[in-house]
Length: 182
Image (cartoon, rainbow, N blue to C red; front, side):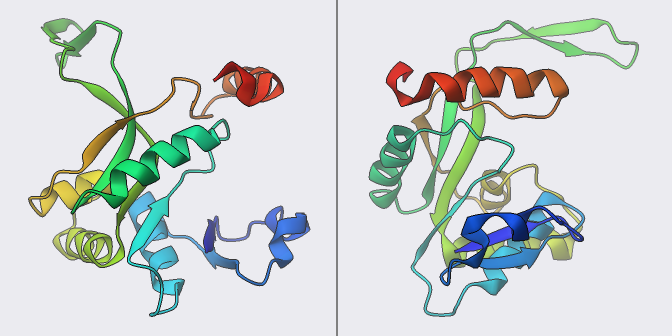
C-alpha cells in the first residue's frame, strides 16, 4: 500500500500507522494525477491486479462503501467509481457569469473516492495523459480518455471532500455519528 504525501509533509511520520511494514510513504507531484502515478510506481511489480485510489480529503468513507465498490469493481472489466447522483439543479455559466443553460441532472453523478481500476490500465491511462499534456481531474477521466467507461457505484453523500475550513466541522460531526448513521 502506498500513501502519497505532499513533498515536505511533516505530519504523516508522527502517526502510528507510518511505521507499518506494508505501507510505503511516497512524495507526490504537482497534480493529483502525478501523485497517483508516483504512488503506482512505488508498488511492487507483483502488486495485485486491482488498485483503489482514495483521496485523504475524504475522511468520512464508510466500510460499507468500500465493500460495495469492491463487489461491483471486481465484476467489471474496467473498474468502478463511487459516486452520488446529483440532486441539485445545475447551471452552466457563460463568460460573463450569467446562466447560459440549465443542465439536466438525470444522468449526472458526483464522483467520490475511492476509485478502483486494474493497475495496468490506470498506469497506462495516467502515463498517456502525462505524455499528451492532459491533466485529468480524477483517475476515471484518464481511463475514459482511453475509451473505457467505469461502473458507477452508488456511494454516500456523507463521503464529503474537505476543501474549506467549514468542511472540517461537518466532517467532525459526521465522524462523531459514526457508521451507525450510514
